[in-house]
Image 1 (cartoon, one colour):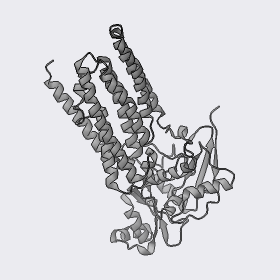
Image 2 (cartoon, rainbow, N blue to C red; image 1 turned 90 degrees about the horizontal axis):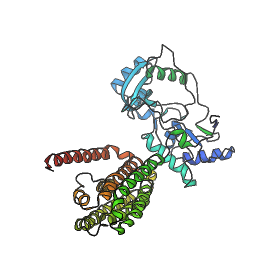
Image 3 (cartoon, rainbow, N blue to C red; image 1 turned 60 degrees about the vertical axis):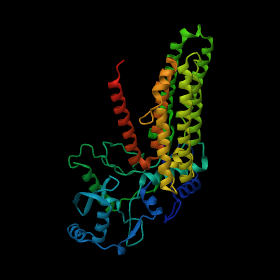
Image 4 (tube, helix red, strand yellow; image 1 turned 180 degrees about the horizontal axis):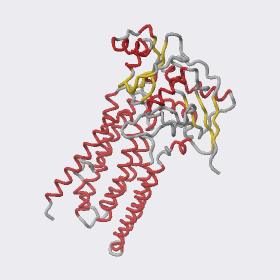
Amino acid sequence: MPPRYEVIGVEGIGEVRPGDDVARLVIDAAARQATPLRAGDVLVISQKIVSKAEGRLLRLTDVTPSAVASTMAAGLGRDPRLVEIILRESRRVVRMDRGVLVTETHHGWVCANAGVDQSNVDADTVALLPEDPDRSARRLGERFRAPRRGAEEPGALHRRIHRGRRGGDRRADALLLPDLDDARGDETVRDLGDLELAAAERARDGAQVAFPVMLVVGGVSASEITGRDGASGVVWALYFTSAAAGAFAIGRAMDRVGRRPGLIASYALLAVAGAGMAFFVSADNLMTLFLGLEWFSLCLYILVAIDSERETSLEAGLKYLVVGGFGSAVLLFGSALVYGATAELSFGAIGSADPTSDAFLFAGLAMILAGLAFKVSAAPFHMWTPDVYQGAPTSVTAFMAGATKVAALVMTLRILVTAFPEQAEIWSVAVAVLAVASLAIGMINAASMTY
């Protein structure tokens, strides 16, 4: 039987004022109506109450319309001050018809009147969209998770309205839109602008959403509904990669065990290193990130130098120990700077925190990225790699070239996307530079090789 869901309106939230704690209002209201929030529940929260709590309200008396707004208002039959606010909140005008402006907001959304709303607010006042809806959603998520740390996320947030095409992504993060119209097959609907015009007319005629918050309960967890299942996918991928790389390394070393019985210890070290990589890639805070890194790094230091009869092996092990220790120190110092700026250790909390110092946060981000780049051997942090790979036993080199790189790349992606989403424009450029530099230097060196 397919899973069944029940949608429950949360009553008794009351009038939301600037500065109110929306999460606390929702939790208390749900408890009063005997539907307390539980792990696996999904919350759908209207944008209006979030905007009001964040103080995104503007009085028309404080607005002076421009000449352009006055001209457009005359054609639309609207208040010039309202049109001026709409234009301020818009990146461009998509359509102007039936007394409604359909615009693309600075967030990249296409919606009627740039989301500016005069309903359920004081007279002569309008409500604007949240300045950064993604940040607002993350903050609310942290507030909902706070009472039950360690439990599964109790709710996912409806944090985007009508998401237009941006970067080729048409995926909506909304779990429930309670007032949707089915426009399939309607030849009068040509694009999103027509849908927004129809929605604006319906709202002007008095259509209202009954509840500002809806609670969705059912047979699966919120993570399963939203498709965001944490790190399970990458963790299983890392398990498989580590196991495959370990099996290959053991196979390469099998013929040498009879001649050098001491190498049997490498099997145990390979297993421990693989477990450390799995722990590393599943870390969700800076502390476990560092512990996992050191876990498998210590094993690799020994594995590189385990063939004591080869002078190059001992030399490679020493070089790897010194350079690896330096990379770990850089990552640890960067983590300390991030903690100092956000007072948070978990990746999700860092992403939703308000940093006390942007300089500390960016410096910490740069050092964390550099520390992980050492493990990935990304240029220009790759100078240790040729000597270590050449001096280490072939089976260990194969293991490091496969499993270590996958683990470090996966963790780099996880921490950047989860802990630093608002800095994506900066770290995406840094990652691109590292990638291009690695490709260019690798190809140039390969072209110059004569053996």
